[in-house]
Length: 86
Image (cartoon, rainbow, N blue to C red; front, side):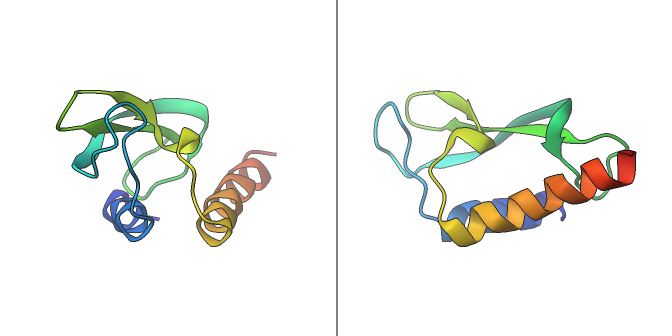
């Protein structure tokens, strides 16, 4: 999965900020993390954060309430990571 595809997935989920309830957010920071997502263009799995443009609240992508379909897609990526590493 590409970072842009992760962004599209988040947009399709209509995510709302936990702090101010705004839908005005963006993919903020990301960095290497063993429990993160395997994203194209990165050598290591990445822990991705969403940042609210209204209040500045940051939270990891994994903490957002996503649909079962989106969670299944993300979990499949994580499973592929674990399988590749073992």
